Every structure is written in structure tokens, then in C-alpha cells.
Image (cartoon, rainbow, N blue to C red; front, side, top):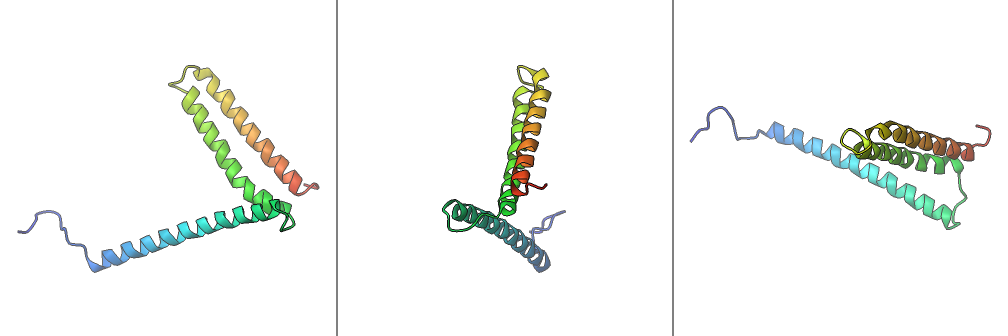
Amino acid sequence: MASVGHSSLVTNEEQSQRGWRELARDAGVNVVANLIAAAIIYLLAVAGGYLNANPWIIAGILTPPLILAGVAAMLYALALLGRWGRWPWLALPVVLLVLAGTVVVLIYLHKWADPTW
């Protein structure tokens, strides 16, 4: 029985394109996972005294998680205190404080990495 309007058959070309997209996605996820694992191993090796610390590498490793934590804290503050919260007037000051704290920590981290900066 033929269906009208939609073809349920997937062509070989569509399957091939989907396969390449999935391969690219999986490879990208693998690269990111390996970079995260390498960063954790490096930090553990420095903490254990097996490697000498390179401040710029440590600053580079810690910067993205700090930025993500700041963004997550700001989104949480907006959700908690924002339009549907109990104190909507407090949302903007809290978000600005979290943003300022994140920036101060990042500046301190980079000044630690290079005191001449």
C-alpha cells in the first residue's frame, strides 16, 4: 500500500549524510572529552608534585569553568529572584555582583600567572 504525501523510504544518500554527521558529532565529543581529561590529569600531576606548574596552562584550564560557573550563577539568580521570584528588584544587583566576582577572580588568576600583566 503506497502512502500519500510522505515517503517512508530513506535513500542511501540520506543515510550516508546522517552517518557523516553522526561521525563528526562523535569525533567532536571525543576531542572535548580528551581535552577535559588531559586538563584534569595535568592539574592532578601538578598538585601531586610530579610536574612543575606552568601558571599560564593552569590559568587556561581554570578560566572556562570559572566563566561557566559565573554564567550559571547569574542564570540561577535571575530564575530565583527575577520575574517570578519574591524579590524581583534584587535580581539585577545579584547578577552584577556575580559578574563582578567572576571578573575579579579571572583577573587575579591571570595576574598570578603573569605578575607583569
